[in-house]
Amino acid sequence: MATIKDIARAAQVSPATVSRILNQDMTLNVTPETRQKVLDTAREMHYVKKNRPPRSQFTMGIVQWFSAQEEINDSYYLTIRQGIEDYCKNRGIHVIRTYKADVGYEDLLKDVDGLICIGKFCPEEIAMLRNITDRILFLDMPVADTDVTTITLDFDQAVTLVLSYLYKKGHRKIGFLSGREYLGNNQLFPDERPDIFTGFCRKMGLEYEPYLLEESFSSDSGYRMMNTLIEKGSLPDAVFAASDLIAIGALKALTEQGYRVPQDIALVGFDDLSITSFTSPPLTTVHAPTYEMGHYGAQILHQFKDPKNGCAMKIKLPCYLVERESC
Image (cartoon, rainbow, N blue to C red; front, top):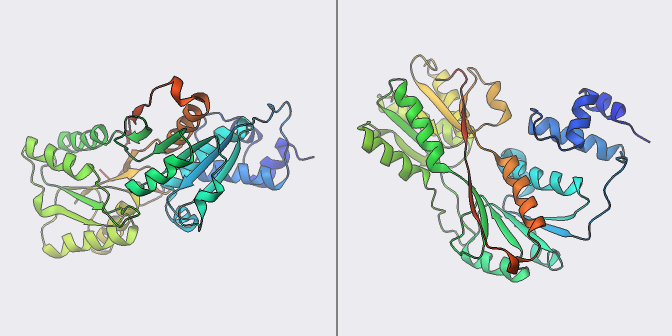
């Protein structure tokens, strides 16, 4: 039978790290990749935790709007799912994981006790999912219906935090590189951050209009958008990217064109992906508590077992700024 020391050797981490990850220690500061590596290694080695709590009769369904391949390319939604599954694993809760791209995914969920939906869904999809079970919760997706619990990021707080930070550093010309997300009916999802950004800039008298661009949430998109700004011949003092992937692409474009970050232009990302600690320079970014979003969502759905005895909640999680060397 595999031991914690066996897993530590295979995963190349300390036994203490393995123990804390397997015991769901939320104060442990490790990357999502390290956490997942330890969990995968324990599973591959058929590790059985001693004094394991009895298996619950509760079955939790997960619908991920990203495909499995998209999860690999962008860990934002993957980390949300990991938060859910870690909560369930520690409590013996059975999980049925599905992807919206899977054919007939709704049929797999027909017998779940509760359902967590990760990402963006159109009204028709929301109605279909609500027909599966009354015990439903949406993560990273605001739903206006007062009977539906949602957990989202506090974008107003996050954007204001970044712009206040840049303003205090003396930046008066600030750009914003954002992306588009589409719902199941091919309708554009309304990201509130551009409006928050422009509202702050107008209030503070900042120059921003020449530096607003929007494509997709990818490094390729960030690379193209930054090159577009460079080709215009007039760069802002600072650029706020709506995702770390956009920021990483923008950083590559600036480096190739001979611009120094942060000496010539400051750069801020959003998400706090683990790779941002290793860019050159390391990227200042907004930490989005995605793992906690998933963990809290699973806890709420599990503990509020009868929707008739509770009220729906609209929860917004605050973000914080991780200062590195790109500003």
